[in-house]
Image (cartoon, rainbow, N blue to C red; front, side, top):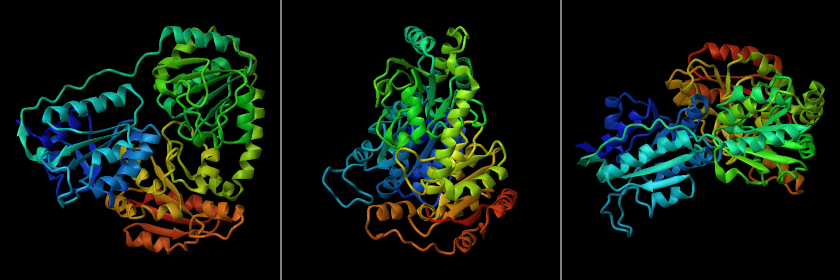
Length: 527
């Protein structure tokens, strides 16, 4: 006999969960009563949205699912934005929350945290949203969630437990974890892809977030083909960006589009080739397109594939390497990638001019294994994504598709807990920082040495520019920043302001030596 709370937590422990993020509340206490007993650590951010972003950062940095526990109603809705971001970027995130009792009337009755339907609200946000009605169903649903995280495209899921069920005892069996992995690609699809690749003379590779778990296979195939590799923001670092074949995470630049549309074969691995990656309409490819993706629904998304290879990216790329005879095509000439990189560099430097010196200083101060959690800020999407070198996967965390604000600080907190041996830095603008600035207090309480670099442009600089470009006076975007170093100090952190790029490296190195976060403000020049 187990309570529903015990079934839930025992399922988490059975599937290797060691850490959850959340905030306790009146309705979820039976879950909290079981965490310590089952060896699961709990971390309390200051807001449920911060809990969600922290779980997302934990998952991206560690490769393990992130778990969020909220209470009912407003707390769950606070976490919904973060769940939407995880859903968009294929991050394995599980949200657990209590809901109204099973006998609760369908009509409003004034119950605490009552809303028409939490399950329906979350169904528009995550991959799967379910309200369980028995202990057995709860155990089965959680087992299915963790199986899906391992075997399918990892996305966000929500499980609602009626609050009366959390405290009620019943017979329940917690299923043993299934040791299944992602599906192996079909041999016929691999053979068809090999034939297309052998016929190609101007190959190119697009690497998305779906390949970050298979960097060695990606590198081996790129070198076998002699094919330049360009990545999406989520694929950044899948091939070291100092590799001779790497074009970096510059898929949005016009020269990248021109090159891909002139390739006679493009291999796209683990990417939607979506508008948020390209910053524009779908590609108009003139050559063949090979798609490698774990999700069959992505086989022809945004562009119809010539060959679709459905299955694990690592297995698919390794299979292609083994099947190819090793004779390189014309693109094996190293000057091809070098010339492409030079054209991309020119366009990137024009786009990123206000941040170039700062990014060079940042790169010089970061250890080679550092993780950077970026916000949806101009310094990131115009600057760091395309120009801050990353040499290993799971090293640049960025809210791509959903494009939320306030991601950087809580995601950096989660990343540091998920990869405690790696240095972690947050990169933000002042507008986004203010969404979740309270999480500096959470990181300070955990004694985390996080440098938080904040480019200050007094509000929402991107939207201000768009308004001015459209020909009307800015409205609602001029938000003078408070004294951010003083605010950081009030939240238990260190805080300094610097004015020159030469000051940034020493400030970051000092920050890594502290045992609390250090907020470092820098001025952002107008566009």
